[in-house]
Length: 115
Image 1: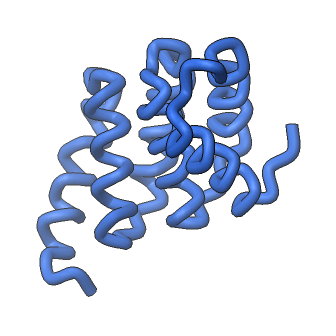
Image 2 (image 1 turned 45 degrees about the vertical axis):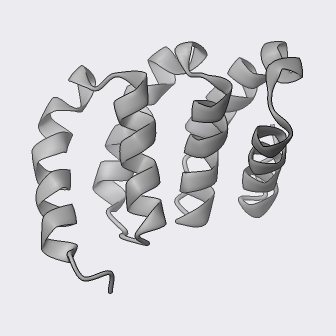
Image 3 (image 1 turned 180 degrees about the vertical axis):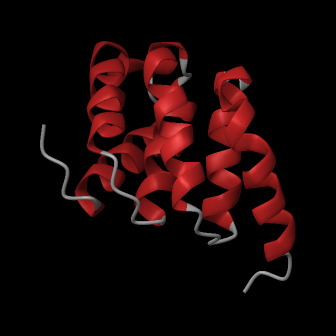
């Protein structure tokens, strides 16, 4: 328990109906905050994934890595999201930092996601 489960639940409840208005940065930051605090909210994670997939090719390399890593940390399986991350990452993989490379490959390995 991280001390503020009611806040995170309230944020999830407020975010889900308006998730399609979130920017790529807001999507990545939200999923990362929930993962960092180890606050599970499957409905929110599914909504975040569905909102991210159509715009995943606009994510920064850090956003791609952090999003995949957050889903892996929470052990929240969303194969379509991981497929979209891979598709977006491959053409720009040479622009990833070493940390983003490590985080991305670690997320795919942890989820045992195979394309």
